Image (tube, rainbow, N blue to C red; front, side):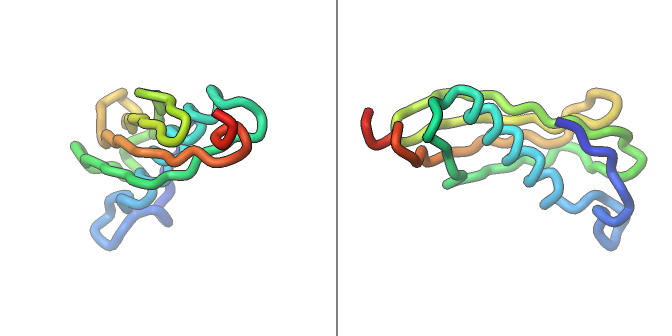
Length: 108
């Protein structure tokens, strides 16, 4: 997924607020997990850890996020995600734990 940063997403010192990157990372990981689930099952984030490696701002260009499933489980799944700036530099890395919910999680 991609985001073209806007000044409204920046904090008082002119950098993109960390919550914006967190939302991108969480969404990318959730989508990655969703692509592997049967109908009727979904997941919710239960733990999210971010490591900020480089600041982002409007000057960063189009920001991209990629999610990757590490382990898909019946009750718990694990994923990681990367946010890169417009030049492809890694800016934020995240790992997360997701709780599986829905009918498929109950029947396995």
